[in-house]
Length: 253
Image 1 (cartoon, rainbow, N blue to C red):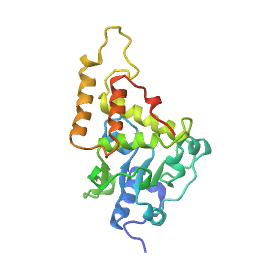
Image 2 (image 1 turned 30 degrees about the vertical axis):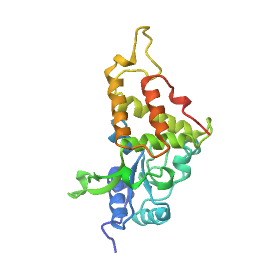
Image 3 (image 1 turned 90 degrees about the vertical axis):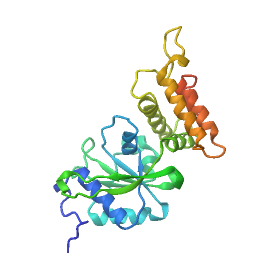
Image 4 (image 1 turned 60 degrees about the vertical axis):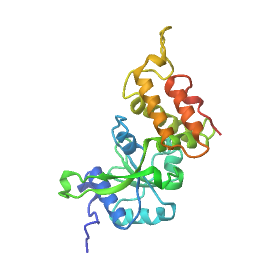
């Protein structure tokens, strides 16, 4: 007998509807979801078109959560090899469920569950956010998931970058994520070039965009948002934002 969490026909609902139903089911069975990657970055002002949805789940519940999505009607899928290779551990470590009828490259979309140890956000770095149902579902109640604060997102990226060799695919993805966040979250979509301005008389001390970003990071430091021993992350991020350092030179393994 069908329940409200079973999907009879994958093609009858949009990917957004399927993701909402998946999130609702997982929260119903007490699996903590943490907002991650595209939906997280969109909250941080990066103008992304969301293709795939990624959530972190506790390591010990990863298999159970994936089984729950299978019961919901979302099949496990294997992305094309070039996509799988390019994304590195963002896909290799995850449970990948298809949320489209088509599995063809360019048309397929995924819901990806990753073990929360991949990012290792601490409880104090998380807050609750609502996930609202698409109008077509005629559901009026949001479900709530966890989402990391901005300083924790940057700290994760720097920690993760240091875990991978310079040429690793996962590191390239992490660098791309970091560059996008600096451009849109720190610079607020302004036209500052993180490699530095060409003008000989340019001084970042006179740039209000950079100074606002640096003050924001100083506030994180005053609030004790960097973990003990990770104050270097704030210094490194500040150097990149100010144009004194380059994203690609962030420490590697």
